Structures are given as C-alpha cells and as structure tokens.
Length: 239
Ligand code: FPP
Image (cartoon, rainbow, N blue to C red):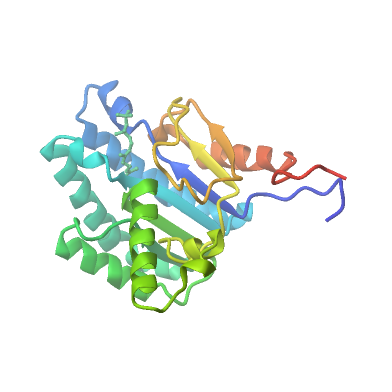
C-alpha cells in the first residue's frame, strides 16, 4: 500500500450501548429500547459490504448482564430468539455468515438450538461475517480457553513449552476471526466493558455520544471513514 492510500477497517466491533436511556427518555420500558436497537443491527449489517467492512462483531449480551432484572433478561432472550427467527432468511439471502461467541452453557436450550441452526444455515456465506457476542465476557473467554488448553496439556496433546500467544488465540471463541481493527462504543461511555479484551490489543477505539437506537448507517459510515485516515503502527516506528 502506498503512503497516501488509506484503507478502511476490515473488522469492526461494536458495543451497542444506550438502549435503556433511549427508552427511558421517551417514558418507555427499557425493552422498548432493545427492540429499537435490534432494528439498527439490521441496518448496520446491511451497509457493511458497501463500506468494505467484512467482519462485524456486536456485543448483544454480556456475562454481567444477568444482573439486570428478570423482566429485562427474559425480554432480551425472547428478542434474540425472535431476531433469529425473523432475520434468518434475509441474512441467508444477503450473504451474511452468522457466528455466535460467548458461553452457551447458561443460555436456554431452545435459543442455543436456534443459534446452532443459524450458524449452519449461513455457513456457506461470505459477503459479511456477523459475529454476535451472547453471554460473552473477555475474561470469561480467556478463562474458558485456558481451561481447554490446560486439558490438552494434561492429555498430552500439547506441551506447555509450545504455549505462545498464538497457541492461546486458537482456543478463543474467535479463533477463526481476524482481530478487530476498530471498536466502536455508542452512548458516550468510554469503557471497554470486558469486550474482546485479547483481540483488541491493537484496535483503534471510537466512543460516540449517540445512543445505539439513534445510530444510523450514515453515522456508521462516518466512523468507518475516519478510521481510514488513521495511521496504525502496531507498536513499531514508522519508516
Ligand atoms: C446496552 O444498552 C445494550 C444491551 C445490553 C443489549 C444489546 C442488544 C440489542 C441492541 C438488541 C438487539 C441485538 C440483537 C443481536 C438482535 P443498555 O441497556 O445498557 O443501555 P443503557 O446504558 O442506556 O441502560
């Protein structure tokens, strides 16, 4: 690539924050905001090919989100099932390959079955790779990966001497994905909240004031465009 040429982010990860505040400011229950947020997911996924974003990873439910009220948690789970049911055929047709990351053990069986089915249904697609983080936490992911790695050592399939950062990365939920180039968080909070901790070591961050249900594809395009103008060195000195 020449010095003047710019390149957009290939992998964008998004912390979709602000649904609750968006709803509350309208005097509506928090779930109303999550439903509005789900509509934005559809819009943002659809615009990815035009922007050259091949991988989109979205934070839908964190390992900490179980602490919310039972009404909100079960409403969100229902929303995820509904999203999969309603969007599956469109995602298939649009060439979107869907994957889920996170610990499935605590999720209800019906939802897990739907997640598995959607992954299989879209497994030949390659236009956009949409990864949905559901019951996901970065530390939890590293702990689960380490447990599997330790098990392989115990079973004699791997020597502790061969453990490098690349080895560990192969045990992460994201083993088949490239690292994110850009992490975006909406709603004005400048926190990572346990999202893709390992994978975002060299990512650029954008903290946007807009609440997620108001985050349009035009604003997404602007954020992606700004990235193109940045100069990433991965710790090296530019020559
Ligand atoms: C954070 O906003 C948002 C979530 C915990 C849920 C994200 C879920 C969606 C956008 C729903 C659709 C997703 C899919 C994959 C269909 P918040 O509730 O923390 O907002 P607040 O900070 O204003 O309270």
